[in-house]
Amino acid sequence: MKALVYHGKEDLRLEERPIPSVGPGEVLLRVLRAGICGTDLRILHGAHRHYPSGVVRIPGHEVVGEIVTLGEGVSGWQVGQRVFVAPNTGCGHCRQCVSGNNNRCPDFCALGITIDGAFAEYVCIPAAALRQGNLIPLDKTVDPAAAVLIEPLACVLRGQDAVAVSAGDVVLIMGAGPIGILHTMLARVRGAARVIVSEVWGARLTLAAAVGADRTVDVNVEDLQQVVLSESDGAGADVVIVAAPVATAQQSALELAALGGRVNFFGGLPKDQSIVPIDTNLIHYKELLVTGTTACNTYDCWRAATLVRAGRIDLTCLVSGIYPLERFAEAFAAAQQRSALKIVFDPTQMQ
Ligand SMILES: [Zn+2]
Ligand SMILES: [Zn+2]
Image 1 (spheres, rainbow, N blue to C red):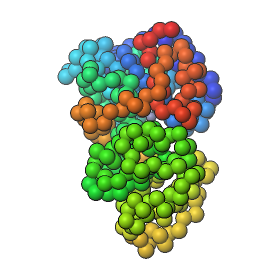
Image 2: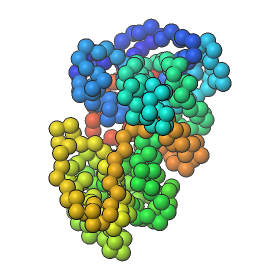
Image 3: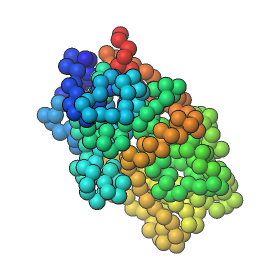
Image 4: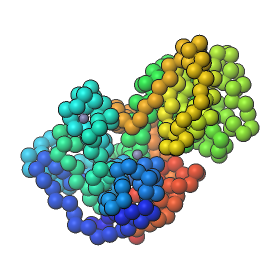
């Protein structure tokens, strides 16, 4: 099979690899689509902690595939069935796993992160992933390129659960990249009364408006605080989600939140820039809830897949390019562009 293999910093190679052999309890998927995400860019640049130098591995953790082989003892699945794969498997027995938070398991295993992933024609799904419910059935009516976004949608769902985005809320989303767009769509589904989206890169706001933002704010042109106050009868935002890796956005989130507001620092900051002075009196006197969320658990993926299958959220508008594996250099270059949303590989397509 063809596979995109990481050999070191900035060194991805398209290689011929044997199709993985399928052990007991495992299944083999033919990869239909695999998304490139920020994590993959970090891997490519040699900045991912699970890809230290010397590691040779196939990345790709956002995967939609079709079952081609069932390992010994696998039941409840059929050859030909289309599935989405929740990427993370926990150890299954630590405190975090038992509480349902396998994304926090210190001993996690993940496709494309700790083991070979889906930037290939085939990927083998480990037995533990099957046992833990990581395989999620998809209808053939769901666009497979869009369905790779179930994973980021699951992260966004977890993020909005943490700040309880509810009917009637004024929600401010800072950042209109793919994650900000997903937050916008989900906040609408959850019944937010007003969704305000701010961005430094004005061009990104067109899509935010198209997917349902009530008010978009190019912060180079308008004063965000004034807009938030006028959109909330002077109260501030009930919920602020910082969906951009920007320290000043985190600082102003506390100012823009209403009394009793809820704030999620959804995007992490660059490693050496994460110490940020904040006015803790804003948290104290306004009784703010300030939290953060990271990644998603398998149940978040199940619920995200349900939303997509039900047609409540259409992820198709986020796919900005589909590439065969052969054109990986172009695909990664496109994924680096600020204008790109989700770039997806189609390994069934041969150049
Ligand atoms: Zn991802
Ligand atoms: Zn665990």
